Length: 146
Image (cartoon, rainbow, N blue to C red):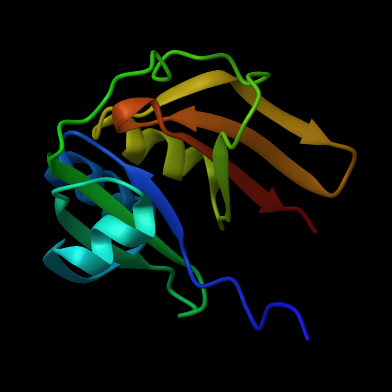
């Protein structure tokens, strides 16, 4: 058999507290924080001397999780990904279903969120938009209509 489930999505950030605050405002719950390092961390990510603060965030339904990671060692590498447009190759966003898209966008602005483009209507089924959050993280929002 293949996979059993998707466990989490990992995002590397410089400001862990800002990222946690952004995702808490979105409605995610902080499950906990920890510091990881040592041989298992080194071997699993292919780096030497890993020391990393992590925060695990959980969606309200309990099924989706984000692992936010702040590397203390080795130093983070800024590959110029923060201001990339949406059509950049590679992983670029996490999508969330929301009840009130306009309210969520307004609340995220107080945490550094910037609307990318505008809220768009897809036929009579959904409102969609992208918000760029701390560290340039793209977050997709979808409000089902009807």
